[in-house]
Image (cartoon, rainbow, N blue to C red; front, side):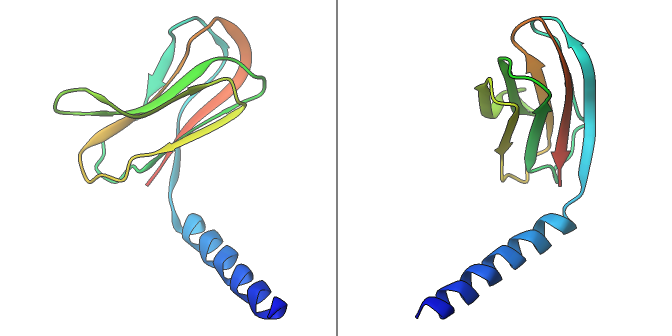
Length: 114
């Protein structure tokens, strides 16, 4: 019984890794110095589904998707973690957006996946 659970778990991990390996990741914003409210955005695309921010130190930041019709924010995530990711599984045309909510010196990259 234990062996079959191990095999199932190994297959799930392998499938997850192969799916993420085929996804295209595009860096859309990088900086080492933030002003409060400063941010950046990707281009608009209907294929974006995952937005990521990776930071060298903890500070309050926000990531979201912005649609190109009402310019509403979707799947918004705010927090101090050094790694944040959010998903919006929609075929609607959208752009990824990341921003700092405080002024800080921290090497940071924002990326989007399709």
